[in-house]
Length: 458
Image: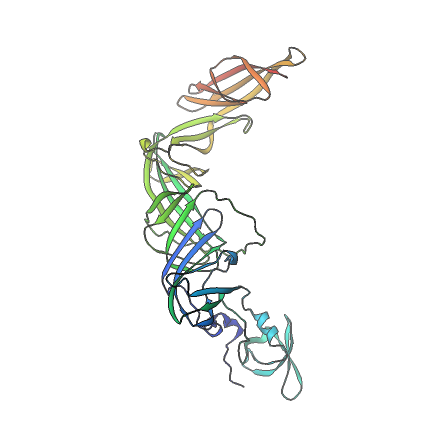
């Protein structure tokens, strides 16, 4: 059997050192920063020390993201800006695979090893999912079942194959030597979001809010010991052709307390992790955004018959201000609301989505539906006053089966030109189509809101 340089096809991805001449990977130059955005993108900035030769020179950069946007790549020498010209760039992301390699070896000699350790050497005439057809040295033809094959060896790897995404640059250099250079690019398949835990006290009037951030890296690269930045906000994004590759996720354990420094940045907010961290490919990393902070909270019962005909929603309301114990920019994310049981265990009582919330703004979190409060809306009458004017009579019943009195906010929506002519309870006109009624209901009692609304066609 002829001596071979390569190993079995099943181990091709160990061959990166064979395929790339003098590749430069992470850590060979050493400052790595990753900025992650809410919209599924990341900005990678890497400082590497590159070795240049005078004249035309090719340099290959490995360990870049498979989801790299080649149109966003930026190269900048840090000291010899006038001595290095980048002439051409190629992004090799069509990586080596068994079928591609076998296709390159059609009409060439390979060695096929079967389960019983028999070795068949010959010219590969064809291959399918079921068998390999070889022309053996004596001129005969041998078919080897693919199910029996455990190893295929080849004399060498054909030129132009890559096991990892690779940037290939052609430079014109006016000097020979090493130069620190910054490489930056945008990548897809990377994002982050916040996850909050709100713990309610026994009297439902205070909550403790803590936050973690989850960074999802499916970009096709690992970023070791990177400075991590997170941008919260909605960036305008131009549409570009092409899809995004779906990869499996692997969740990892939380890293423990890891405070971020937060500051305003342009019209967004920027969070910078206080220490380097590794973002592994196909990993969700979770780090602490801020320690638990307590704030006053108000529990509201809200009945909106246009959204639920019989149930009132439970909504927690608080203000994101320093006076109440918070007062920080809150990035968008999921809030899980918890409460301690009498035995000391913590139970989940609801979840809601929080939008990007600046300081000094009100936050409303919908926990769920109130079990012991039932509501009903009935239209009692409709009268035509004239060709363009008519009135409607409405009755809304609120029944409280709790052991304590409650106040239920009834949200009533109208349309066109409307006017409330009569109401059993005071109300607030919130906007051009909505009125709020606050209905107190004693324990185990029922209260009724009655109102007459007049509509007019102009």
